[in-house]
Amino acid sequence: MQEKMSQIRLSTKISATNESVSVVTGNVANSAEDIRNKLLHLNQVIHVVQNESTLGVCLGEDVTDSTSGTSMTALAQVPAMQVGQFGDPEFMQSYGLNMAYMTGAMANGIASEELVIAAGKAGLLGSFGAAGLVPSRIEEAIKTIQQALPNGPYAFNLIHSPSEDAIERGAVDMFLKYGVTTVEASAFLGLTPNIVRYRAAGLGRNSQNQLVIKNRVIAKISRTEVASKFMAPAPEAILRKLVEEGSITEEQAQLAAQVPMADDITVEADSGGHTDNRPLVLLLPAILTLAEQFQRKYGYAQSIRVGAAGGIGTPASALAAFMMGAAYVVTGSVNQSCLEAAASKHSKNLLAQAQMTDVTMAPAADMFEMGVELQVLKRGTMFPMRAKKLYELYKNYESIEEIPQQERLKLEQQVFRSSLDEIWRQTEEHFNARDPHQIERAKDHPKRKMALIFRWYLGLSSRWSNSGEQGREADYQIWAGPAMGAFNDWVKGSYLEEVSNRKTVEVAWHIMSGAAYLYRLRLLQIQGVWLPPACEVYTPQPFSA
Image (cartoon, rainbow, N blue to C red; front, side, top):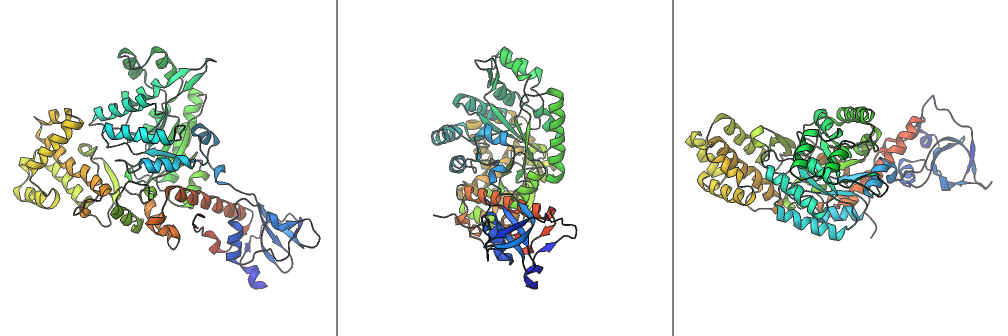
């Protein structure tokens, strides 16, 4: 009996309630396996009980009023816990969600229609990866998602495009035309007339003269100075200009002074894609404090909610975010390996093999000239090394012609697999269909022309990864953060280890259920009860058919 008792450790400072409970004989769990099975009943109260010969765990349903049970002393108790109890209830109510959980946008449609629809039907908020797509493709996605989710929830990504304003403006035009009421704004360095127009154009008053916000903005940020811009009302100068050009009404400009630019702020820590690699434990508290300061300053009717993204790939990371005050959590990298993601089978398999250290930074296609980098997978691909080489050449030379012949030959043979003249022809063709202004700007600027040629590789490498371009596997650009490796470590040995079993909704459910499971362990520890180390593991089990 001593062996049974030794598996649960009690703090010397534990203060038993001395309350006696009657427990159904034989229903007290002593071993780690049996205790874990009890803990998995999240809808049941957990009791830690003791008598002279037994120390263990039982469920609320194991406690009986019958005198036929075994009388035991109650040492600790934790309530039932449901996944919908995490996060800000107003966030869930605003978007019509069952959990405070969002699947973030992955560009080029990797966060696909299928992924967004699956999430929405399960009561999760999915964001379509509109960045990098031509208007016709975005329009197609809007129609498909709205048909499947006429009442939501869903969002569309609006990525800042500093070198392609026409693309950003065209996306806003599309969202307004089709009544897309939620956008996830990402990679913004500051506010642009495009995002301000989207926000202000959805403002109005109802029949009771109350302010109504139709167009909601979820801003993904990693810097306090950028967060401040989205926490404040829209700048007066931009609003004036929009009124003058007829993009918004005078009333909408006035109403915009009463609301923040964003309803929700997603704190993006060490994530895949665009990231500053900030630690969540430092960044999230800072942004929460900032949100409180802006609320005191402006007294918004609806306070700004702050969520967490970057590094969220396990139950423990999700729980940590909620315990720090996150209103919701956002997953990204882990969803890219799921069946619904529009990434190739080869890319998904590489992601499923990744460890936390198998990621690195590489130049970003959309902000190449600015030296902005994004986080990508380095295992199984030479893209990071080749992309960094292109940026090195861009910094060191003023034109393609200045590049030494030997270096140019390497580029043509190993990276581009074609002459740079042919690549320029293809680049012209691409931008003439997408944004002709880019070609006009490059005509008399050799360095600009060089940047566009190099961006040909950076842009196509991600598309090759998505489509599974054969023969280009070494050039696949696969966005991923360390959360991918953490997820793989967690699900190793479970059914989710296999890529073919990874479904977005099931991954979300297990992350949130695991967080609830771990939360109850922490509550017991606070009360002075330490369960066997084996109980720390929440192993995902397959959904029943």
